[in-house]
Image (tube, rainbow, N blue to C red):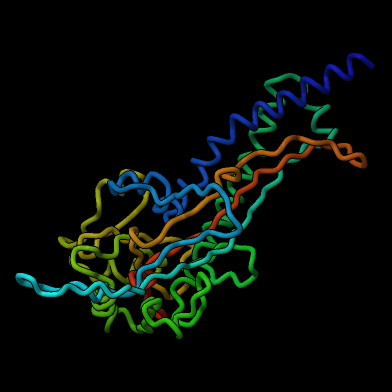
Length: 323
C-alpha cells in the first residue's frame, strides 16, 4: 500500500509540475501558428514593429472600454479678452464587452498511467496530450476570431465586429452611426477587386492612421497575386521571416488565413482593437484531480477574455468577392 501511495504522489507531482511549466509555453504557442492570432499577440506583431494587442484585465463583471464619439465643441481660436467657451462636453460613453471563456481538458487514464512507467515515458505522454489540447484551443480561437458567434459564450468575432447591424459592446450601430464599421459588397475581383480594396482602405484611413491588419482567403489572395505584375509582387520581409506568406497592399502586408470567412477581405486597425484576457485565466492550469468514479486523472486549461473594440469605424471588410 505504501508503495502505491508513493507512486501516486510522485505521479501527481510530475503531472502538476510538468503542466505548470507548460502553461507559459501554451500562452505563447496559442498565438503563433495562425495569422490572425499572431497579428494580435504573436511573432507577427513583433515583426511588424508594434506592441502586441493583448491587454490584461484584473477583473470586473465585464470588460469596459471608454469611447470618444464626437469632438469638443469649445475649441476655437480667440484674441485678447474674448470670452472662452466652457460648456460641459458630452461625446464620451462606454462599451461593455462580456467575458468569454474557453477550456481544454487534459486527461490520463489509469491504463495509460500504468503502461507509461518512468518519468520520461510519463512526460512524453503528457506532452502529447498537452500538444493536442494546444492545437485544438488554437484552432477553435482562430475560427471564432472570424465568426459572428451568437451563442453568448464564444469571442465577439469579426463577423459581429464588422457587421453594420449587430450590437457590439452594448451599442447598436443603427442607433449610434459613429459605431458603424464599413462593410461593402464587392463582386468580381478581376473587374473591381483592386478598386474596391483601394476605396475600403482609404475610407478606413484617418490621416496617417491606416488599416494595418489585412486578411483574406487563400482564393482571394491568389486573385490579388494574379492581378499584380511580377515586379509588383512585393512582400513584407519582416513578416515573411515569421513564416507567414504575404504580399503588400499600399505598403501594408496582406495575409491569407484559412479561417477567414469565404468571399471576404478584412481590414483592421491595430490602434482600435485589443485582445483582452483576465489576469487569472490566461491559459491557467487547474490541479489534477481523480474523480471518485473514474480510473483517470484530469486537469483543465482555462482562458477568459474577449476581443474589444474602441473605434469600430476604423475597421471594415469587403464581402461577396468572387473571381
